[in-house]
Length: 114
Length: 113
Image 1: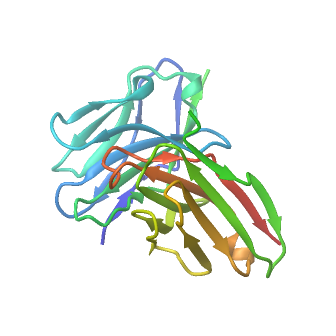
Image 2: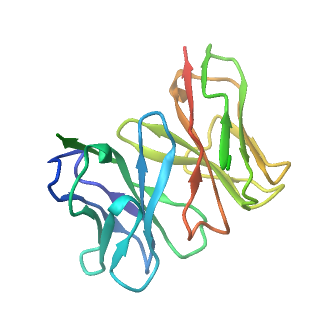
Image 3: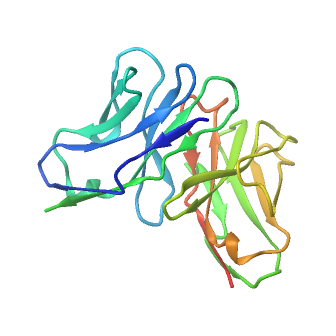
């Protein structure tokens, strides 16, 4: 069965420090991988995606994610966290079989402390 | 740029009442989706549509119906609301099958008492 795991419910990081939000997946074949961010009372916003190519993907707001096929991971990273990065982050995966739907992780709440 | 618009934003229903949630997108996207978001469970797909006049079931379709009579609109109906349907509902749309990512609406917070 396909699945996405975000092992941390919450990540706390000091402003200015690097941050990592973890995501691992179990999908047959080579999936499409995504990160979305959700601010309070808002819908999810697309951050970045991995389709193919370079394992390090750059996205919006200075975020990047590293695809690791052997570890089936797609961790979200940022070199220097901002208080405004505090939000709920979702990892999502879509297989290439044409099922037309994503599988979302349960979300990780990022709290950046001033 | 309106993107994806959901109405209403908030609603309180009594058990057994019915209602329709409206999703409208102005991006000419073929694919549209309804998700529910519950604490600790992420987003779960209720129904989706791959084009005007088509609908299909997602992970948790029971108790919901949908219609896509026009390309830009995707309606989610609750015929007889139950407390278990208390949730935040998100509509999303995508160009083609979503390899470029989804665009989400801002959500509808539904409480069934």
